[in-house]
Length: 432
Image (cartoon, rainbow, N blue to C red; front, side):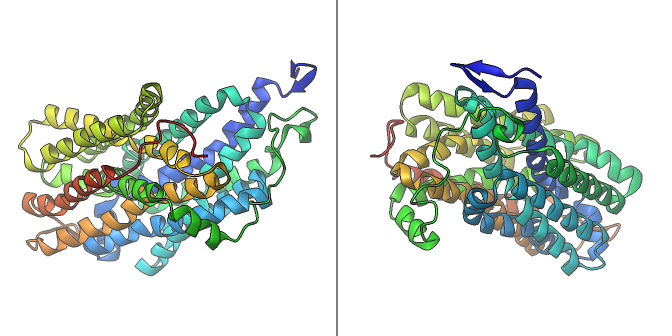
């Protein structure tokens, strides 16, 4: 391979750089696959463990409990260990957690498996941003961020129709066990071939910052307290909790059974419609973020898209839409809910540069906290309105129960939309 020379400095060839990046990004694909996979297995899991909606929501949310808790430590670990060790160990632990979930003899063991998976894959996003800063030219960093989100989207779509077809053909346990084995192979591949910096392959690095800064080892609690003293940070985390949490709760768990039990769709069609929302969500983020940057203001597009999302959820939950219109509304709602990407940029601009890392970690906690709280919350509401119907050992909920449960999504989105009004506009400029 021939490297790319820039001003006499030989950077790694594009083929090698993108191969390294692509290998590491597969852990983010695994993360998204595991995040939404319960959506197509709700009936099997409820029957297997003899549980209701609240317990199923809690089982799925164990992923989010660990993921949220790991957001702040992950940034510190990435600085100390480097992406290679963190990504390889993350994939290895995810494989153990996935296998534990697949072989679990009880609900407690299944929950432990989900907890391990959530904690381990939480390292993927931050580690990949750090890896990208070394292997990929800075001018391509926006492209890299978008492609990383695309890898997650591929994982989410894979956990839709393809996973459902495999579960129907082979059962959920063998399929999830096989995916755990593939994740273990990924851990081995990352350890053998991925490198933290091009210098380890004889090329110049694209990273020109210092190896460490005086703030890199600052007390975590002190940095966190200082970041939270900026009103925008906790407000924007709260706002993303609503918009992202609604999508993760619907598309990540309860959308498929709702489409099957209320609208009478078969499992494959329901999974396909569910994936439409995820695809739109993944596409909306980069576009809405770019539009806000072009406008030079964050709040107008964030708030306008938030209104669209709130109206979309209201139509999904309370209006009797024909199926084609329902699919369109789900797509538009998913697209508008991608506005959380605006919040990430807005949060980093709201603090001095030395606090950007911690601010990003706090901002990234919001979306996952939404799934953590709303998935079991909707399940609890479903159980409260359950009529007692069963099929194949799984509870069947009627339209009234789902409407009551999904009302939590609409109420949360409406509440965070009002909270957004109190966020301070940065004008797309970094706080001094």
